[in-house]
Image 1 (cartoon, protein in one colour):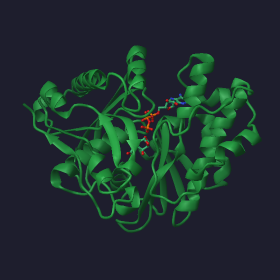
Image 2: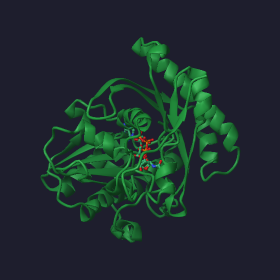
Image 3: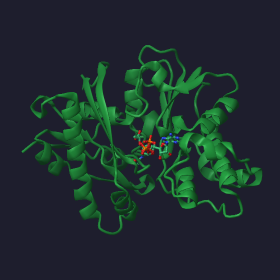
Image 4: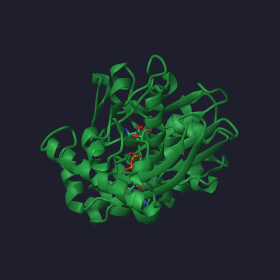
Length: 349
Ligand SMILES: Nc1ncnc2c1ncn2[C@@H]1O[C@H](COP(=O)(O)OP(=O)(O)OP(=O)(O)O)[C@@H](O)[C@H]1O
Ligand SMILES: CC(=O)N[C@H]1[C@@H]2OC[C@@H](O2)[C@@H](O)[C@@H]1O[C@H](C)C(=O)O
């Protein structure tokens, strides 16, 4: 999995039957070098040297698989399948178009392992949003937990999975920006890739006028299903604010838009579990807790799950489901008219 933050590759090793049995076995993160990150950024929107970047991205994923297997002391021959998400460079479900680069056949040839890739196209072509796809994995992980439960991923974009009692009782959608706007601000002002621990935002004051302007966007009132492109929000015009105040305001924007997700779920969750890199932003976590007013909110790690690994684990799980012809998405998760399978199979050479 190469997430919208463009920070690197998450690779997870999972044992699963594609139904209720999931056992995460290992995880490795391989950061991109600055030069590749820039090249990846240069093809967002589907422009420039897409083919060249796709080949490079695929080869970096083959290296990530090799590193994971080395660390886990597992032979490639004993691995049944790779779920290869690739990297989203364009997401326009309303035009029935979504584009994840990553060459499945090339990865299968490089690793000697069967590969499933292109997870989102079938859903989008059937009229779904093509995202988020992680919810069915969240449901498998949380099978014995009290409901209603919210699992929130704060990556470049933030997405919520709301789980009610029944197996089809799932509502999921992108809530708004996660870290992407904060990352872009901090990078342009300080040269650092993100606001470590939320310390910059923690030293600033929220500009209420700016926050109100940011919140004045039709996306937040729109009913799900709904999903976002990473760059749905153009760089917010923050030039009149100090770095600290701008970071505080964008962090409050993320927190506030997550809270607005409550307008679109059937009942208030009894508990929130947070995954993705944003759970390390203490200012954001504090802003969320403050707005949730006593409802428990904590990183998923306290549950024994790895909050950095869930998305990569999910695409392993979904790859197995794809081979079994099982749904990857539901009407409640992507708005697809009926439960829908997906993914394309690439046999090893
Ligand atoms: N120590 C930290 N303090 C604050 N923020 C952090 C920290 N570590 C990571 N992050 C944030 O988490 C981001 C990476 O999160 P993650 O890997 O979950 O995103 P992603 O998977 O690329 O995105 P998406 O889920 O949208 O595809 C970084 O860009 C940064 O903003
Ligand atoms: C189009 C696309 O790649 N969307 C990503 C992105 O990153 C987070 C959020 O927006 C989510 O909708 C999705 O990824 C996760 C893995 C998902 O499909 O569940």
